[in-house]
Length: 187
Length: 366
Image 1 (tube, each protein chain N blue to C red):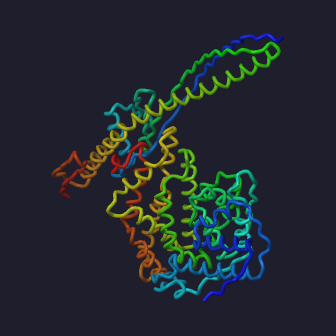
Image 2 (image 1 turned 45 degrees about the horizontal axis):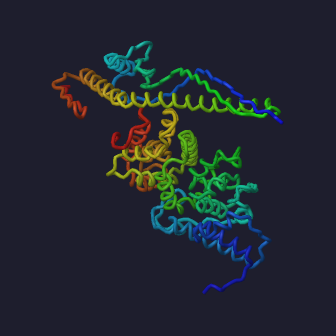
Image 3 (image 1 turned 90 degrees about the horizontal axis):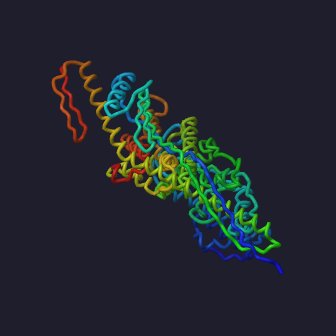
């Protein structure tokens, strides 16, 4: 008569998963002045908004691991998030097995537990990925209009400079609601 | 009066599939024939005679109904003449080679709907305008059905330039399928030489309707990655078409793209709103990087039409004493439904799609 054993298996997974997400686009910077001057005005405008300008790139940390970078000459903007997620899981499984199949059943139980842990770890990594994507989405909602305002500001300043180079500026009217700028110049 | 003819059951299957390929029978009528493996012995002379007449009449009717019968300004040689297609240029030769028969036969004998069986590949090459029309019609027949990917992935179907012209989205979507690996790319050059250069204006109205419908259908993929892959391929295919048209100095044959864009971007609608409505149907799961990539190519037609602004300007710059003035003016008139500002509207739609926030919705972007 075969005897039954209770077999307990303990397994654990410890992983560090590197997660990344990001989007990029191009700011519509009108070529009102020279490329270098437009880049300089954009740098100043972004500087007032907390960006740090180094070697032609403006960079700002947004929190939650989100970083915004703007290449001033090309207007290429990249919003990027990167984070390492630590995944630590530990599970125990118990099964009753007969003596003559002890090794076989133990191996099968170990394999099942390993597969289960693997699935759970992948699920946890996906959850973390969804979390960083959500953080990025939240940040983009505010960032896109903020960058639009910066571009409008740069365009207005550039137009003023251009007008001054053409003649004597008599009047400048700004409509903050529409972003419209009217400049009267005596040539 | 048409006399009744007697054909065998096998021959009947072949004939109804031929009719269906030209929209003369609905898909439901031939679904079982396509899905199952039906036997097909060599058709007799009576059935072959009926098949020849069916293909010839259906092809002529297709060319006439799809735009050939409309009296409009048409490019004829170096000049422009007003009239129906056959009034301004000699009718194109409608050659149906063994390709047309082989494709119809393949549809009958291959078990296209049976996933448990291996489907033999169809890898013939079309030889004439008739073959091209059959290939185009076959993809139209299965479009939107469970057989679309399988049919669109066949090398023989992908060798048809008219199938690409009408159904680039279907053929691009099927690119991941095994049968399409290393398959032929659209040979657009053939489109700008007779007989296809004569046939394309005859298909113009149908091409407009097809491209409008396909763009409005939205994304072609279950995931953002798949949507991006298909969309990028469509853009590449359409850019290839535009380049070939420029090389052949026949941008007039791209009028269908411009007319389709005019329908998609009516003057009273906000271009940003139209673009974001299309993007709103993309999958909302997955990394933003993938969703942004899918969004950029959700409307390949608009992306390519925006690039035609340069061609519009070039046509407008042709002076009255220069060669090609009449063709340029006729093309500009045909592009008038979109108009010069329409190209700018297409660009505004693309700017909305290229924006930083790939989750922006129509009400936010308008």
